[in-house]
Length: 352
Image (cartoon, rainbow, N blue to C red; front, top):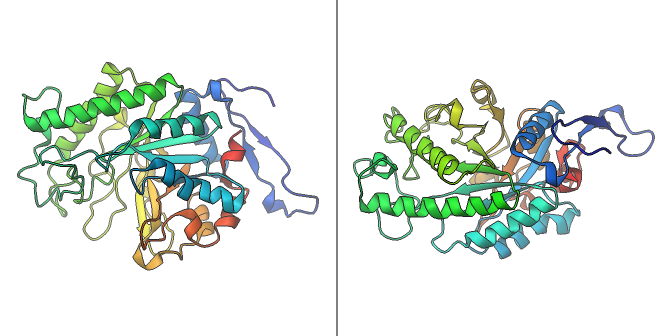
């Protein structure tokens, strides 16, 4: 197989033994050597995955602040049962006050070196409140939440200092990954069309803070691009799947120049992708920000149905991790072995 530098080719390989049904012959997307995986090469690869009617399998590892334990439980745990790793590793830079970002980076670098892809989310601390408090209702507290106070151009304030200190810490961590050659699928401020995080909508039925959120996203984009030189990020806009109290996916969209990938966070009783049409209208590569069963589906989610919902539509899906009394992760649900071995599923072994 010849080395790829800029263009990703599709090769047809035979899967299985003679007599395999024609439907099981799936063209595989050739992956580039690790040294050649630039931002543009990864971007093109994601497009090829969709064109090839496949999907990259991802698993999040952020149940606790202990990435070593979470990786062993949620990620290697899949390998222990299937002898296959997910191709996409999901990590977290926030949510907990004591998250070890440097150790998260070590796991990201090692997975990247093995041929895998890495996505990182950031649950940023609430800058208006003491302690580490991510979940702060943006509708109830809309009078306190003044997002423009956090911008680089804003006057000095405790909230601005709190936010930008954390932003600097995150930027430095992403710079470490850049220096290691890692391309990051970067997913900040997710589920912004909900009201359960401080960066969310200020009104569930008729939000009016779109401009504030867009300025916050663009401020981060400019800071990371111009000040930190982070040309290793693919920016993922990841709203929540809309529902009775959640507006459409595009309501807070930051703008084409600031987004590379789009995908909803989906939690439902059974797997679905009802937002695909709305995402396609944004004219970006479609992915899944995160997915898992809602309460009544814990442990009953059909992983083959997840695969079939996304293949050929989304470049990857990122299954969220399980937690106490919540069976959400891949290995804690149905038919995960069949899914990991399906020809349409891109696992780590297919990335080499």
